[in-house]
Image: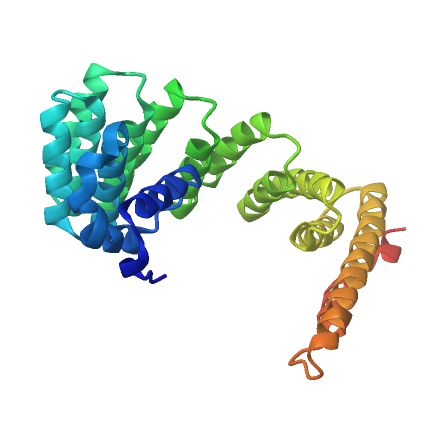
Length: 303
């Protein structure tokens, strides 16, 4: 977004910066533009808000690779707040931008040593290890972090993603189970845990995946991915050596799932056709493919 800087006063820019901070918006390019043209020469008029603006500009400068501007902001803040852990964190961010990762890790270790309850530097260490491709170190650091901050759902999600990238599905499932304890009513968490169990394979894991898919659909009946997953789980169980009663049960569940998929796919396709007369693929074709895949399940022979 471009601004007519000739018509903006320094108070207008200050209020705009304040709004972006309150709304948690970075707007890095705009911040740098307005800082260079208007606010940098008026910073002494900002009063106590000046430090907040300097932090905002410093982060925007790193986003825009304006290293000199970031260094100037950090130098001013360091002079006014010597020994501040918050300023040390900004120094580590600057070192990261300069790709001096080892130096950045040293600064973060200093912060952790002074304040072991500070979660931010531990997260930054994980991010640095990932940037360096040191996955094992990232896992070790994140596991140590989760021992201290067990209620951090984002941390469990991140650890799960790393484990998935390494093919450690059992450990990834454990992470999602921890997330589920904190947020048991999220259909997306049930769905992701079901996806992991389904990927692990084996009849026991397929059974568990089916249960989680069912719960995801129960929480949100419009979750098509969970419905597809439920359908596939039923197909695996029906083709397994499960008992006849179990195979009949999953057949009914699969028929219900395919009906729900058909209902939602066709309705969404009809809504789409109203805005576009030509469609590359009709939704009925997808449903037919699913029905064909399920047609091989001859449950009647089990009687």
